[in-house]
Image (cartoon, rainbow, N blue to C red; front, side, top):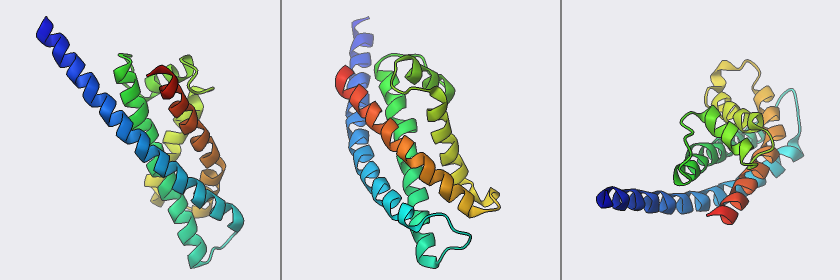
Length: 157
């Protein structure tokens, strides 16, 4: 029994260390996402984009996807492991985040992940400007959600 407890404590400490590193990655990722969002907002919605404008939007979508991955697949997942919460699926984690008041609405977190997946499979989208504008609209929600998760972790761990 004592050995099992030592193993559990060791695993918890490893996951806590990983969470700390991931929070550092999230912070940097949020910074560059906010930068790209500002540049994309200056360009706005158009029917056709120059190569330079496409580069700005490509950077934005890439940074959105990276930030969403760090938040949803690393930080929230590891947070709930440390808290010993049984949230195996992503939708379970969304619902638990809402229950714990980490997010106002589970669907906002779900939408962040869905948009990330749409970005990864953007070849399925006929009008690429459609995804660009959806990312611009959702990036602020992602940044706000990430800050709320960081604040929750600071308060509880």
